[in-house]
Length: 202
Image (tube, rainbow, N blue to C red; front, side, top):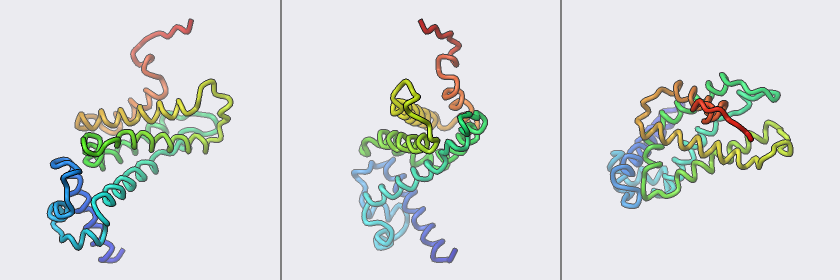
C-alpha cells in the first residue's frame, strides 16, 4: 500500500467520523459540506475529491458498513447437510457483534437520528435479503415448509435489528460473546422455552 493510499484511507476515515459526529449533534438536515470539512479538519476541496455531497457520503458510508456486516453472516458455517451446529452459530455471531461494536458510533447514530428516516427499516430489509440469499444457498426445498419462508426471514431480520438496537442503547454493557450466546439461545430454543414455559399444542 502506497503513502497516497494511506492518505486516502486516513482522510476518508476523518470525514466519516466527523460526519457521524455531526449527525449526532446537529442532525443530518442541518449539516453542510463546510461543517463536515471543518469537523474533519480538511478543506472543502479535499472533501469533493472523495464525495459528491453529503448524500453521496451517507450512501457510500452506509453501503460500506452494511456490506461488511453482510460478509460476517454465512449460514454455511453453522448449517451443513441439514445439521445445525449451535457452537458454530455462536462463533459467527461473535464476529457479527464485534463488527457492530467496531462501528457502534455509526449504528447508534443512524438508529436514533430523527432526520434520517427509515434506517431501521432499511437495515431490516437489508438483513431480510441477506437471509433470503443464504437460505437459497442451502438448497432447502421451500415446499417442505408449512409456513411462508418469507415469514421466517422477516422474523429473523426484525429480531436481529431489535437486539442490536437494544445492545447499543444499553451502551454494549454485555460482551460480544455474551450477546452471541443469548441470541443463539433465542434462535435455537425460542423465547417461550427460555421463559421456562411448557407449551401445550391443543
